[in-house]
Image (cartoon, rainbow, N blue to C red):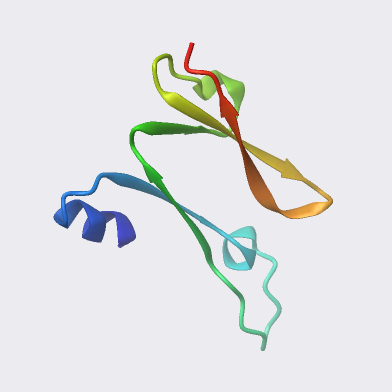
Amino acid sequence: MEMIAAQQRGIHVECFHFGSQSEGTTIPGLQSDIDVLFSNIKANIMRVWGDWKAGMVNLLMLNDDMIPQYLLQVIRKY
């Protein structure tokens, strides 16, 4: 829904949803959160190194068991 709404306003983005609902770690009776990451299509967000694209800003998603969120590492364009 967020992507469609942004596109109607002329903004081209990708949307990633994270958090306990998407991870399947919700507990019945508790309100879980939804974390949303919006990415301008001028930047390439990579889950693995194979997703790297030349000539773009590349951001590698990093996840550590000690940190309950993703970190983005900037990777060189070339």
